[in-house]
Image (tube, rainbow, N blue to C red; front, top):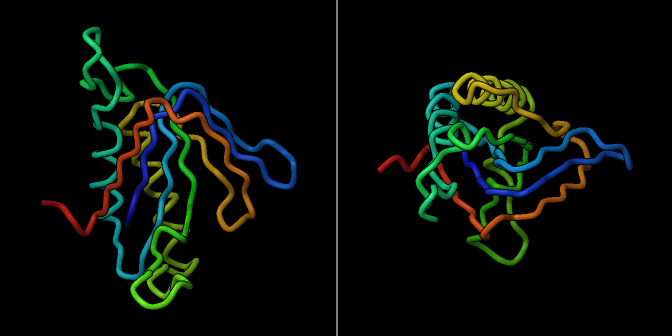
Length: 150
């Protein structure tokens, strides 16, 4: 599984012109699920995301987590995070998990993240044509891949 975590001032998702979720200050997280990913990956990533110290403390140092700042969280599924760009200019999504694996793992990640953060996680609509808007704060963007745990 792969995450792109962005520290935001606000973020939201609309589908067919209808707002489905929005947050204020917090984390906007894109979630990509690959073939072979497991619940263990979701557990590890949820813990990492909840504890990621990317919010400023009183001295302006990134030393606080989304939990510490009482921030909100919005997680959106995005299969394009699994893209392979090794050959040519058209990305290949062959590594993307099918719905039978991706939906349960995305849902499990969101549930585990909610538990780890002690707050609800807003979600996008899996498989929908979503329009995502956000104001990246910093900008701060972190990429985490569960297959690279060094």
